[in-house]
Amino acid sequence: MATNFPTSLDTFVNPTSSSAMNSPSHAGQHTDINDAVEAIQTKLGTGDHTVGVWQDFTPTFTNITVGNGTLNARYCQINKFVAWTIELVFGSTTSVDGSGVTVTYPVTASNAYQAGNGGQVTCEDASSTDYWGTLFRNSTTRVGVYVGNASSTYLTFTSLAGSVPFLWATGDRLVIQDFYEAA
Figure 1 (cartoon, rainbow, N blue to C red):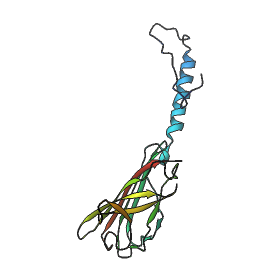
Figure 2 (figure 1 turned 90 degrees about the vertical axis):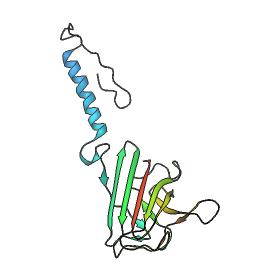
Figure 3 (figure 1 turned 30 degrees about the vertical axis):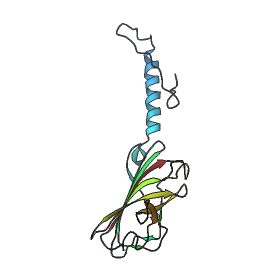
Figure 4 (figure 1 turned 180 degrees about the horizontal axis):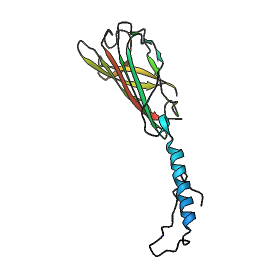
C-alpha cells in the first residue's frame, strides 16, 4: 500500500501474536511503514528547514539605518504558521530616518489583510520609559511599525519616527513580535 499521508491518515493492520508471517504480509507491513515514515520525513524536512526550528533572517527596514546597532531577527515556520521576532539595539550610528517605518516579513504572507493588524511593538528608551505599539500590515511582504498615541479620548497609533515615541539614542531597543499565515 502506498501511503496516504499527508492527504489523509493511513490505516495499518496490526498483526497479533498468533498471526502467521504472511497474514498480514510481513514484507508488506515493512513497506507500508517505510512509505509512511518517508512521507513524514518529507513533510517535516531536514536541517534548517525542519518544521518548528527557529531560523535567522535579515529584515529590510524603511526609514531605519541599522548602522552599528545589534540586530537579532528570527522566525519559525510550522506549515503555514509563521512566528517572527526582531530585536534592534541602537548603536551610535543607528537611526530612525523619518516617519513611515516598515520592515519586511521573513516569509511572504498569504494575504496583506487576512489576519488583520496585530503584532506587538515595544520601544524601550534606555534612559526612561517603555512604549508599546502595533503593526499594520500593508502588503504580503512588509508591515508598518506604529506606536500608541494617547493624546485623544481614544488610543490612536502614530508611525514610528526619529522622535516618536522618543528621540532614539544609543542603547534604546526596538522589539517586534508577530505571527501570520504564509502564502
